[in-house]
Length: 578
Ligand SMILES: [Cu+2]
Image 1 (cartoon, rainbow, N blue to C red):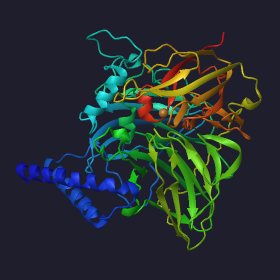
Image 2: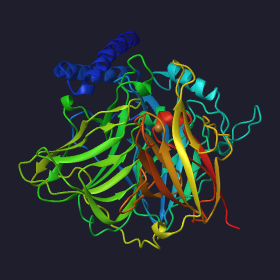
Image 3: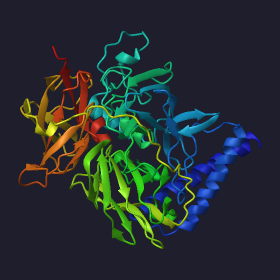
Image 4: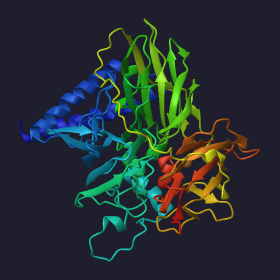
């Protein structure tokens, strides 16, 4: 095939893509009228894309992602051995045949590219992650508008906390200018030190083309067994990279009689923005994906085969940029009790049955699905969330179809791997019963300088001045190792926000001033919008700064990622004990 033919095919591809993207919009209300035409387009696009790639004999930069209506496969699993998990990941980006900009964590397995593996370790293990940044322009499909928005908020170029000598190469531990091609990794939920090469996002910045950067950290011996996750956290560009798919699960193994031997589903819900519809990407319609498979009813939902009559173990992370989920499991149209074992990685003292689980961006839930009766179809869905008059539309949406199977051939890697790792003294023990050493009040708020200016986004300690965050800001809060603090976080804005604390978990003690009956540990919590009158909605959380390894400066922020990128973030400095 000659070059001109290839170029011609490329043109057709673009034309087809625009049709595909236009069609995708129709799916938002699950009212696609012309799905057969759409499917034909998809097939055509795939064939043409193949021909185009073949003409230049270039492998795709990002691995292909699964098509709609197929079996949900667990992400590839990487297990630690002899106390160590070493993994080499490359973060790269490539526009998919659907026109969408993929950001992919690529792991090479015997010459094959695998995307976003699950990292499985035991408490006490060493995680060594060698990250290569291979992000290349173009960075996304909406750079001019996003840049404009960020410029207003941040006065580009944004600066990291470090200082930089002109002409000298950047030290990744003292990053300076954040570019669209900059990245780093946050190990969300792991209770590990906030220092460079471990879990620091204030100073650590890996530029495209930098030598491979090594993360090396020990999972604490008393880390609660459960689900955690990794994603980039380069201030200003987290949204773009995570929306492109840059995220993966971390599972701290632990033997649990309730789950040992059960079929295990590892579900990563992501969020894509197929078209901006002429607005900013984060304000356009979005779709949810399940392990990279679009969850679009008219194309056929992602499905799993559930073994009839058996409980199954689900681990779900909301790796979406901004969608707040209200998860339900329905069998035959009836919401089932999900036996929730943990939120945000930390096992409950006693499992609790919920028919709806609120899972904000970055939240995780691990639960037992009740046995599916024979001849019954199930569906896993979000019932939708009202994020307020100024919030995103978090519409109801089906995510996964559950098909009954008498002898499910579990192409999903089935059995849960058990370990005999003893879990040492329980982390955060007795936190509920301690007397707090400090009480603090914070609030989320928003402000527009003029009617057409972008909204400024703040998280503020009461008494301080609302301020759009910069990485070189001083800490808004200073405390000491050993402190146990109660923080009441209000929402004074017309949209929901999602409070996330780095490095530690917190107990959710009160909601709107009402004590929670059985407080549980979380690292991410939804704070609903203020309706415009009456008391501000609030949560009160108890922070545990007793671990001497969690000394240093780190951040807390809204985990709706365009809010985080927009400056709804602040620093806390935890001074070491004397
Ligand atoms: Cu927010």
